[in-house]
Length: 99
Image 1 (cartoon, rainbow, N blue to C red):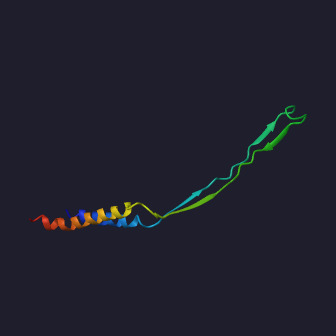
Image 2: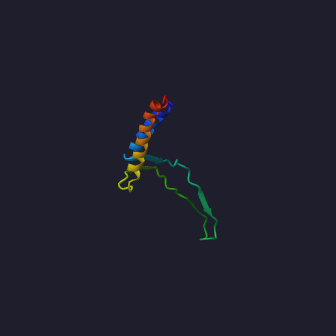
Image 3: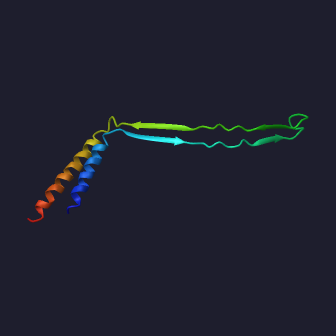
């Protein structure tokens, strides 16, 4: 029975945290790679053999996402109210046990 009170307090704190913005940082690393040499035999595009390197773009991308709920049609407020009521019930539960 005593374990339900800290659990309920944690759920209330979690419901409060849903009102705060969330931040995510992502990083995409593309390592350097040797470019393959492509050879075109003589006679396809002219009398001489042609060769070129296929170049790949090396991109390192860093992305920062910040999300803030603006309107949730009462979802966050109701979730907080439910968890707060559950916490109150958990606080009263040890008092009801002896009865």
